[in-house]
Length: 71
Image 1 (spheres, rainbow, N blue to C red):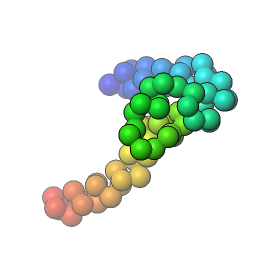
Image 2: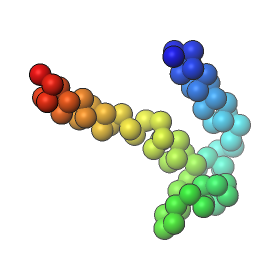
Image 3: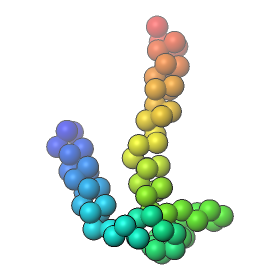
């Protein structure tokens, strides 16, 4: 499982390295990013953040709730 995680992390790094600063931080630079949301215009860096880092903000809360139920 660790090997797969490292493979995924390296794939994300490679994708980030392949993007220019303009592609990463300006809107309307990637067609898939423009079509992914109906109302919002997100830059590519926001998709990377939401899909990699942001879930862990709620993860802590979910673990606490689970511990209260189980313990």
